[in-house]
Amino acid sequence: MSQVDIILVSYNTADYTVRAIESVFEQTKETDVNLIVVDNNSSDDSVEKINSKFPSVEIIQTGANLGFAGGVNVGAKAGHADYILLLNPDTVILDGAIDKLVEFAKQHPKAGVWGGVTLNNDLSLNPNNARARISFKTLVFSATGLSKIFRGSCFFNYDNYGCWDRLSERDVDVITGCFFLTPRALWDSLEGLDTTFFMYAEEADYCIRAIDAGYQPRVTPNARIIHHGGVSEVNLSGKMIKLLKGKAHFIKKHEPSWKQPIFNGLLLTHVFNKYLLSGLKAVIKKDAKLVHEEWKEIFTQRKSWMAGYK
View 1 (cartoon, rainbow, N blue to C red):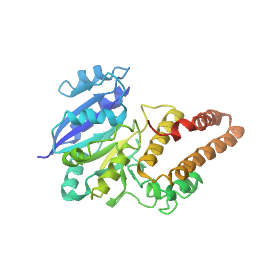
View 2 (tube, rainbow, N blue to C red; view 1 turned 180 degrees about the vertical axis):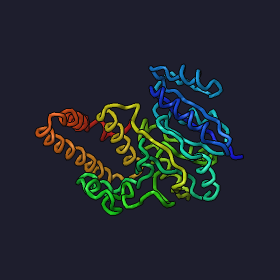
View 3 (cartoon, rainbow, N blue to C red; view 1 turned 120 degrees about the vertical axis):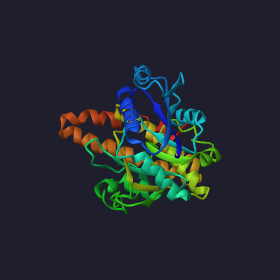
View 4 (cartoon, rainbow, N blue to C red; view 1 turned 135 degrees about the vertical axis):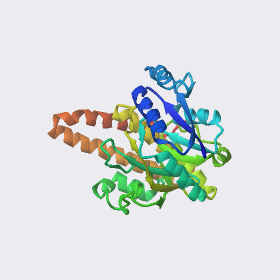
């Protein structure tokens, strides 16, 4: 029986975290799992609820918000299994997904990183399980809105592999950190996640480093989970600023210096266009004003997120 350390980073998501843990134990029958919860100094009753419901689950209280990468690395160091599975607290395991993902990993050892398919709460497809590496092409089509207009196109929406229906296996650049399996041997050789990424893009950085080391991340359609997404960050501006900061940091780390201002300029163009479009919508619809204010805040904070993480 394969051994897997499941690392779940918790931050003010008590009820979601409990449901995620329940689903792991309900749906995992063929894999020896060691579930480690790393609590990033939650101010809700996360620790109490988890302790009460699952007294055997190890909880590591960091005493501070270390971000996703920092929290995961703490959890990984406490484990010892052959595989490490990153699992978000806002997920629900379906139909033995962990067992199926581990079996897939055994069949494709050269992938180095393995992922499944993510669904929304109503079981409709959530295509954010995997994506392409940031490039001039992905940034241009995002900035101009073409990736959204032509969602089903693998040319215009290459970032999210738009024409891929998630019903087949596929090599990908990046597997999302919400359901992300990797062998401990590779994890140790890559020294885990880069903690300079506080949140977002840390899994992209890991996948690209794995590719550079000769691996090829791969997705199976058979391992499926529900991923709610963004439950620890309720406002749009807070989430987007962290997301953009992560992207800018990835660009700074992985792209040559001459490309960096071009790529950052395209990120800014994307935000500016969202700001303008939301402003037009706010004129027509009063209930769109709040979204416009959020994009205004994101645009106003551009110097901060364009600098990436320090």
